Image (cartoon, rainbow over all chains, first blue to last red; front, side, top):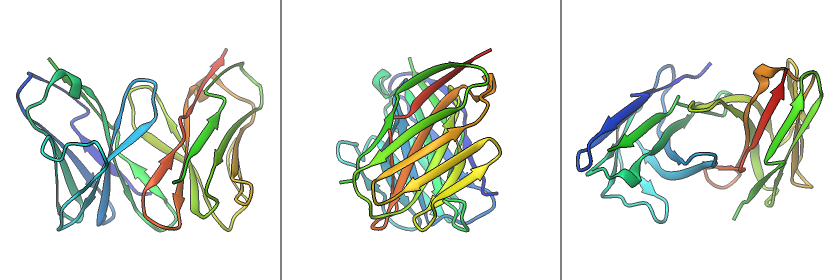
Length: 115
Length: 112
């Protein structure tokens, strides 16, 4: 089956620093990947759609300068949280559509804590 | 704009019960519907994918049905076990676009 690998699974960083999260499709190519944010006991909130070789599409209210997305290859998308602040602490999850009847596959998520 | 609702938001049952989780959506022009399971602090695991032309899908003790015209899907869990405790999310993919729209989830607790 389709597998999406997300790293790191958790990260603690100091306020003002930047953090990069990687999302890789291991056994399929993904021209489009999606980044979600999830607060405790809430459903997933789509942040942006990552397109290989072009700019990401951000949802309304998501700061593109704070959440930098790069999709440089068909198997890798990265989300960089720049100048992180405690309010950026959250659970971030990526996903990709693998086709072949598998629907959407999700990464294991990254727990970001900004102190 | 597609809206997805899941009822109930939370459910606690004794082990062995058969369960029905409900999902409704406002726009019937969907490409497919997918049920996911999420354990605390983890990503999403796909359980069942139903294409718009299908009525149901089964995997082990899980059965998902789809009634596109009425905008409803149900996830049936037979003979529930404590290991089934998790949050269950349904998500629809519209014909137009490639983004999933998620419901709020049902938090299930199966007590031994």
